[in-house]
Amino acid sequence: MRTVASIDIGTDKIVALIGEVDSYGDIHIIGVGEAKTKGIDRGTVTRLEVAARTISTAVREAEEMSGHKVTGVVISVSGKDIKSQNEKDTINVSPSPVEIGEEDINRLLDRSINKGREDNFEIIHAIPRKYTLDDQEGIEDPTGLIGSKLTAQVHIVKASHALVSNLEKVVSTAGFSPTMKIVSALASAKAVLTDEEKENGVLLLDIGAGLTDYVLFLEGYPVVTGAVGMGGQTITKDIAYFMKVDQGEAERTKREEGVALVDLVREGEILKIRPRGEMREVAVEKKQLTEVIQVRLEEILEKVIEGIEAAGYKLDSANAGVVITGGTANLKGIKEFVERFTDLPARIGLPSEVIGLKERIEDPKYATAVGLLKFAVFPEGVVAESRAKVNLSTNSTGFVKAIIEKVKEFFREIL
Image 1 (cartoon, rainbow, N blue to C red):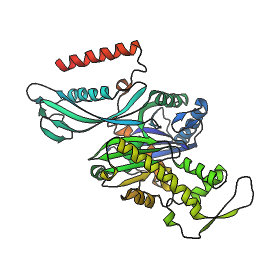
Image 2: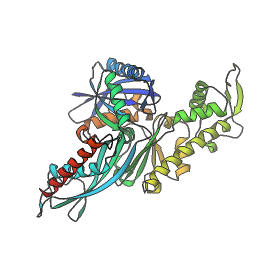
Image 3: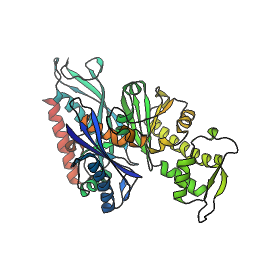
Image 4: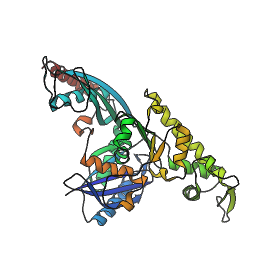
């Protein structure tokens, strides 16, 4: 069995997983490592050496548990500047019908990737939706079919070059080789969503500590991928401010007493907190805490919906509802809150279809790390390094390269 490894680089924690892949393609989790994040904030590396040590700690723990040493790892990419777009393009394969080959599909994908290029950004994913071959719509894989004209809609996901490069550098500094980069929302989706949900339309909502990553699927494919720069840590800071407690007390109170929806709290229900700078505990109404949490969650959901609508889609097209994952999915009442806010069914997304250490990883906070392992085995829609890079500026060198690319594209079309 071959070994695969992943590193989920979160704001609150680094999670490292090691798995073995059997002859059927099933992943057996054999190592789990965690470390409190230091030197990384909402996907951005703030202190290189400190962050590298944190990553090393998590991976070494997974190595000790598994008995395997790893070198290559699949890493998560997340940040406020994650963005997506959908490109549609057509190529004329031949004047008369011929068999469609992989080179034809790659040529079509390259055209879409070129359309999605942007200065200072790196394309991470190019995910083709169903193809049209001549007048035949709904083709899932045109390879080997007969036709003369091929059309595809492609979902492009990209992140800033600086963000991606610094994540790669910190992982390399920790002593590991980043063999593949995956946007966190798509990794989580791969771990927790069913094919039926994707086909019917579903919103994946991954609420982490510093970011809320999201992806909307329609007819089986992603159409909007993005991130909001708020998460569970933002809620903790709100609790600390409004209830006048320190961060540690705010986090404890959120985890032990926090509820996402005011209507789930009984009138007059009391909890105890320790105000900032004091040793004594005081009693406060639980509704007061819940109101703080609910207001911030409403803002997060509003930002997600704004991102979806800005891309030209509506949330009510997600007929299968909303799947909530990430560490904040463990907050009491969050399923009911999301259902009330969106008027859609909701469920908590747990990693599925992996073997081993289930009692450890069957938690929404491990969704991204598990999804990364799945991408290591089935890397659909991942753009190779050579195709992902973009011009970093509009200087003369970049201009010349762009002209060369246009010339190459012209000759490809006429050959």
